[in-house]
Length: 339
Ligand SMILES: Nc1ncnc2c1ncn2[C@@H]1O[C@H](COP(=O)(O)OP(=O)(O)OP(=O)(O)O)[C@@H](O)[C@H]1O
Ligand SMILES: [Mg+2]
Image 1 (cartoon, rainbow, N blue to C red):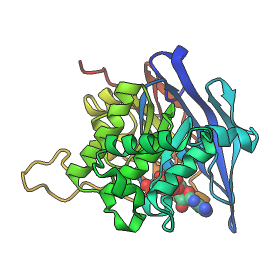
Image 2 (image 1 turned 180 degrees about the vertical axis):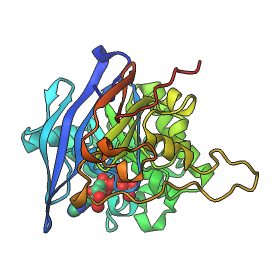
Image 3 (image 1 turned 30 degrees about the horizontal axis):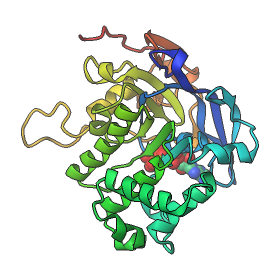
């Protein structure tokens, strides 16, 4: 099994072989293929991969929010014991925002520009907790804004999104995502537009909820520095497939097993630099193949230093590399964990 939690008895989300199809003028493409993962209560899973690898669409599919023209073709999403694939829209509506929520990748488009922040919170309560009375709501919204470090909550609720800085908007988005104490938050590049100090503060907010309240967190990020600080388990995506599922500890200590995951680790800023000045980044040679023109064998083969004729021809197998870990590769390097 790909992904995985230390204690499956407490698993809250089980995704199996999820495949997303998009209809395009060139024919159907599959930006997420056979995506499987397990998330325990209070767990922290990181999803990494180059731009276009399917991270956002994988996250959106867990919320039933795939964009127009795309759909779940097959697979299963079991949340709290209930199957969500094929579930009626009102089941999704009850879960979305209340039990699974998302911090969207683009804060600009996630906040309605013509609504004051306060009205957006009101909408959340109207949809999921219509019975909570006005004063209780007002206090809850104030407390939420304070808890994400916005210390003038009354001014914030009266503001429109454009009146706030990027960091403040991101805090508001996080406050909205955690407003109803969901079981799972999917944070899609929550720190991309922020400077280093701000991105650490934003991550701390999410990690605090994860540690204190047992909120499970799926952290999508191209920034391995962010992932390093937090993830118990890491899923590495390439061209829509999980090519490796590996513990965070192993990933950063002894290193991952899949050649792509290894290259990703080496290409991060600061990795393996010999001089203080840092040489140019060791970028991964070549490009991700387009979804409509994937090679017949391993999608990474054209860029892989280890690839041979078999890799070019045949789909690689999923090879277990340890407890709840594995790599989609004919030649994974299997390393002992470093204590
Ligand atoms: N509506 C769409 N129509 C066609 N292709 C799409 C659509 N939405 C996404 N895609 C394609 O699906 C693939 C996965 O996109 P996705 O946004 O999930 O990538 P990502 O890993 O989140 O990338 P990034 O790091 O840039 O956010 C990409 O190749 C993208 O071009
Ligand atoms: Mg994305």
